[in-house]
Length: 163
Image (cartoon, rainbow, N blue to C red; front, side, top):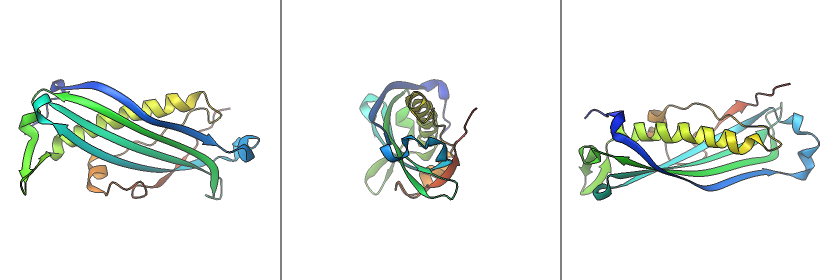
């Protein structure tokens, strides 16, 4: 099965959670934020009759100082992307009497949803005291292979401060 990008359409983008939580104790010392720990969880689903597929991404960032110690800064997002895939039926597979979307289409949809989420996170944090947070690029295939646990894909990202 070959994915044809022109047959994939974004139908809806829903932001269910958008939290930027900065504790008062750090407001005067925002320069101490040197980076963030990053965690991501992904869920997918579909409604075959409607040719609709859903990708839900949960993103968690926590502020870190130079010594990699956690700071009272937390950014959380839950972003759902609904797609219409013209030929979705070609990507539905059956295993143990259950239906699933083939990994190739889920990879494509996850990549599109994550790219979209990166822009949303940047835009939503741009006009905060954090001055915009750029979350890292991830391999959607690797993401699908790992557990959907928010702590399973934790890594540190540097805070790109501009003078």
